[in-house]
Image (cartoon, rainbow, N blue to C red; front, top):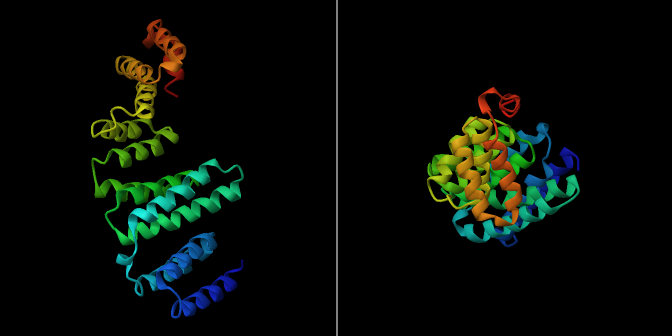
Length: 238
């Protein structure tokens, strides 16, 4: 779809809004905007279009819970999708739902975290960080927001920043989250803190005994190291 065509379609939708169900049509327009304007040249147009709508719609009519649930469906479908185009399309549908949630409830931490996760999956680092910061600024101790902000930094091998957010998540309700405990074990190992690494590997093993052999091999490997003099010490910190 060309930019000129998109503008004309958008104008038609605005006219139709005057005679159709405004809530349903508004949601359709938001999805249209987010899924259609995909390149850098049309970002300004997208922003202006959204601002135009924001001045003409009462977001309090929307149900944030239902929007988040609908967004989650698209999000899970996107994660399971095999083709890049299908995955990105589904991510944009999910994004539209979470965006509407954030407008209906400006303090909805979950919506901002999910938008951050989508941007992260689409390798849009700047927008991912902005969304995660919005979430943690709204609720500094939120374990869900801090865990996925930690995931953002872990993915980029920024282990010290990842550790900061992971620990905040751990200390505020996610202490029994398997993925978090395993991430902490890996990070402490990479940072050379074997005491804490072994602690979290052991806890991960207790939470996932099906992988007992794998964890035991890891712990034996750590125990057998003359750590600060070994080549391994330098390799894992690269």
